[in-house]
Length: 261
Length: 215
Figure 1 (spheres, one colour):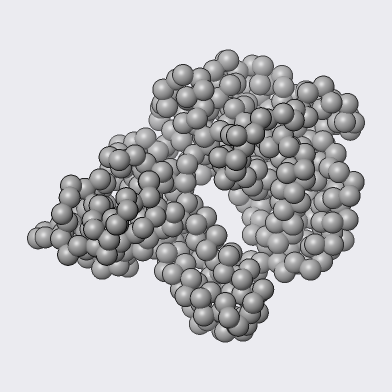
Figure 2 (tube, one colour):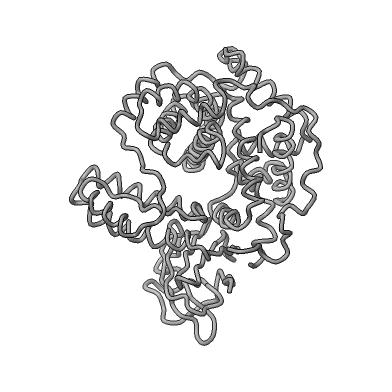
């Protein structure tokens, strides 16, 4: 890996204290998936942080108990993680139609990898689920679409060969790219990136042998972006382009990061 | 993924982490409530949809959850809302609790802390304009914390915090109780990012050893 692996290790404390920004959290969780000792350390530090929490205990307002108990009585619980069985999951999704858009579960070692993306994806899926419940049929098509996006993103994050790299953006902010060479896909997660200027868009590029290949555009930095067809690309870059994107970069990259082989 | 990245020791802890001895090892079960494994079993029952078990769980964790959320958010009304969300979240996601990855209380507190911090960060622009007038963590804290064990636990944590260097203590408490990112903490303390990262980790490790946290 690039510089990520040299610095990421020191983030265990900040991670256990929830003091990382989303991109760094993603980077660190990807690292955790590869480093058992770090996972073990994080476990201990988490328990320790929790003790800081319990030390602040104070009686909850009386009225809250009844409200919570009433609310859970009508709140569906999420199913446990299961080992991926694609067919079974499809059946479940079909069964859930019209009731609830469900988040596909990924039960692999890299579960929770690139949490920023997971959080964003969860927000997308959660929002979809909520809407689907509220307005069943109308929201369903959209929910399904979001679901499919979320599944593909989760698929990359959960890939056994997923690797994460992070770098800064010259105009401010940071970006993390999680790549699965086996799937030929990558997920780009930006944090602290300003909205694109008027009539401009951010365009992603896959770079390597030959000319940079366009890999999609993004208007805002808030959601993870799925990049497909990674192939032999050795770098992912971002430039600012006229709205709609360009066939070839017309400005200098504001972000470029080498992809792990 | 086999192996680790180049430059990392196989044990991943090469850089002189564990320099701090553990002078005050304590039985981690000495804190409030039932023993950790009983709490984990309770969560197991909750995962199967047992509402009575949830009511028991509520009685065990609502105080710690509410207290932590108030500590971070300060505003009582907002805290109650967030604490309620957290408790419902515990019900909803009980099946995802994995005892192999930590204790049930830590699981609940992790969810509570994340929620509180998310609220702080998403509401940052709004709260920046407001004055943080409410300070319920003053003397009132000790008055309301009636349970003796909770008080002992608070005392123990306070004493262990007292064993940290000032920079470690400030880094840890600003992040955990203040809900700040380490970048914000570095700004507040006028330290480099690297220093703050290191202090947070060293501080937590020292706390861990002082509290005798099971690993």
